[in-house]
Image (cartoon, rainbow over all chains, first blue to last red; front, side):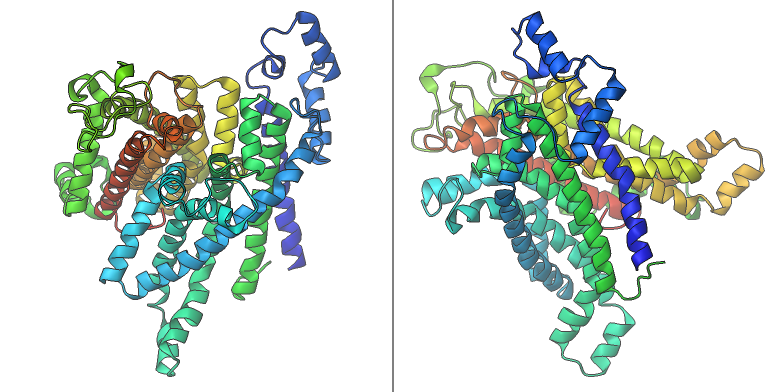
Length: 305
Length: 301
């Protein structure tokens, strides 16, 4: 187990290095970063001064080494807009995003897994058909449109919920539901197809033959084994969730990292953009590491040699 | 598609195989309706001026934010009402189809070409090439797709070419994974060894023997990828990072209408329904295509 953990950690190193490279290249894509970071009417002297202060007059590899060294310490320079450390701004807004992500994931699991199980167990029935129809819709409706729709219905027409902001539980409902919708569809779809496989297995028949309660067979014996692929999908879709956060936070004025990223992009505040991209990518890698390690807890057959 | 004949069906002629796939795909009503929706969307993209009832760019400030024609205050001829500049919503949706399909189809073409090439190389050569490509896939998949694309488009500018390239390159890892997996399953089959034994070059084996056998997986995956790219394009234009106004885009229309929700909900709602319909049609058609081509392809694909 320890050696597996070590090997798995070593495997993430090239990915981390790649993340640093891509984050660095982000501001060099347009050729001259001063065009990006300074207003278009900046004087040549101002450009020169900006170049020498930020080391942009050095060779590219030297710039990269400096950038990489700082990035690994979490230092992406000062935000051009707020004159504060970019990473500090991201960390400040992280709790709001984590709150939204957790609420979304909890909602998606609580709705998605039972929907998938019921749909698989009653395969071909009217319940199955309606769940699958909703799942298809869930994959077809863009989350930002769902957000706008939610605002129209629940905030403008019915006046049940606020249109945005953060603080009360009521303000969490619309953003979390919006974000969870696509995820529910995906989780239910994967749960359904895994449960269909598992319910055919011998050990399920054995459990039934032993006289185990049907509910226990389905929800404990079968679901536990169907859960591993579901977990993989959740890990991989964590990136989708983070991407969705960017849009959803913007629509609902949720003061999180995603909204910060969009505002930074509009304001061409690239140190902040780099910090957000870096933090999200590292978070994704860590979540998938945890998911890999969770397999061991769920399936003792997986060996770690 | 006719080349997709699997070894087991090798005795059937290409035409009968094609007919078989078409009949299988269109066996159910949902797939037929989906095909109809997709054909309509394609027609709108190719010849919007024939289909749109009005000029989608023409402004009429006297007729701002009209509700749909069937509601009380609606004006005949403006079927889905007008936007904040008095432009006909239905005509703009029809015009918007062009950008949506253009960007998403070309983006899938770009990611398909890059991904298939990388996947073939990784699966066929194995070893170091495989390891490097797998690492590259991991690295790119580590970034939240939308955020990366948004950031890159913000840097390079939202021109049509840039959008196609950035969105296209964002999708190659998933193609590469699927192609690599499929190559690994056919690489050691007898017909590949046979081709090698009679002296076919590696390139020839890849292009003429392996590629046709994994084409089903690629086609099915590409169809789902088109839906994903339509969503991505709509998200980008919703955020103001897509093709710039006055060119109508579905995401841009939803974003514009959002500011006038109190006065008219139709401006935002109708392009959203258009997006949902097209994506629904693609997904249903893709499912049917998968079942007809190769029922053994994974449903989670």
